[in-house]
Length: 387
Image (tube, rainbow, N blue to C red; front, side, top):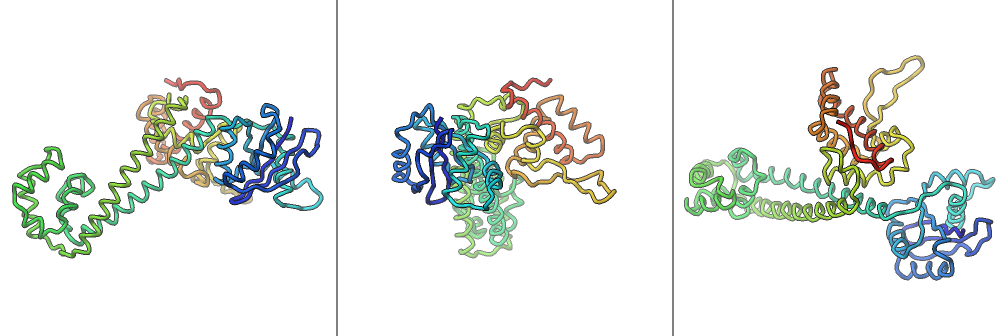
């Protein structure tokens, strides 16, 4: 077996090749993180038999993702190892040395000494899900921030409007109205038939002449300002919100496509849809990274904190919230959906509520139970069966 170790960095990677007997076939060399560099790397290992070659690299943020996907597409056997493994090997050296050349050799030794798992197509999909879901959360946060800003602008120019629609201002009807006529003076001066038709079209018939009359009356008595600067901020904020909604739809379609390709058993859990399933799978990645459900709970930050000093040991503590924030969010959200769709989980939720726990505390307990189920079905690749 030939082992190739790659030390990943942002701009330049280091690599070396060695046999299981310790014979160095390729001395440590550097190559750039681009097409030219990738071809340089391939030229060094092209003589090796792919079926007898194992390429290893550390899990280091996103810097190695392009290289991993590139090598995987060419049919190379790849293993992404935990940096803790190479760190423990480094500590065995008498001299404390850390250089790029030394690190790529340590990665090779880690491949030889430790049990490794080959990178698979599902790992690529998990990586894509993780990227999509995290980007989706950023878009949602941006959208939420814009909505808050929009409310503040409407408070200045037409404060009464947000109470006119029962659903608030964040509906298509209100957006269309504000895009065309954001000032109360403009709305008050509109022809009744025009305004009624605008509302009817935007609401698909829900609003009409009666609402138009009420809206014109409200606009006439409004205490809002007619500041054109605020009107511009309103129209541009709505434009950005609608753009983000379109982007979210594109992201959701891609996530659904990947989930259909994965056909994961997590989708057999009642109440877990494409989005929650994608967030959970994307954040967990390879389930074999966790030896038991407790470690998965800790990774999600759902494990309880420890408060102990001397003979004192706190009986009640909060969850640590030190793991993956997105995974924790997805699991709590999934816990509620599953409890609404499965009697066993619903009974467990009601039991925790009857014991004095509030809604979110009870959901935390349900999430603990759900994590154990998820761990089991992913580990054994079996469908959910808990009636």
